[in-house]
Length: 240
Image (cartoon, rainbow, N blue to C red):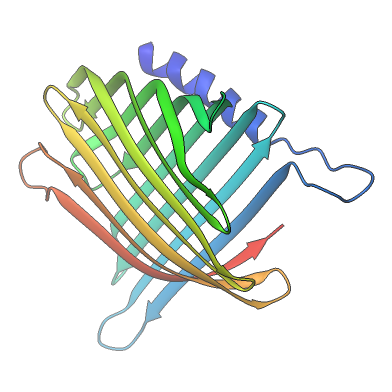
């Protein structure tokens, strides 16, 4: 019941953060959205298909900034699925004075080959923008929360967590930008750490290419699974 209630509240939060309002006159937009898709296929002696997709939505009000993210990864080799992962995140920041903010964060991971049925976390805390302006935004945050780890054999491990995070956004030029993130959820039994970096370059209009690298480490995993997963991808991005 815990996991169901957490998911319901979180999904409502994601839908709220994704609802954009477009002003009749153009000036400042209060929302941004993008969708990316990457695909690799081989045939012949070995037939493989791999795809990854990501949807990002940011919605801003006077005091709030809502960021929602959805990611999916799938792969099959010779007709057999050998990778399948879904990730959902919603982080909402309430602005304070002096570039500080309070945040609430939800994450849900469903990785069919990680040894876990799912991992769900909710947390809240304090963050700050250390650099902001001239195309550069560097922020960090710290907080506490709760995580539920549903192991594949049916066991469930509940634990309190300390959450740490850092995010860098750098607008290199009018046509290229770089985003780098690092986060860690530190629990009594398990620590989950994620690193991601992506370089996006505009091709034409609203279409861009994105080269990205992601790594995820789980300190304590079920027997027979690896602690660290990585993903290197090249994708097409459409920005709304």
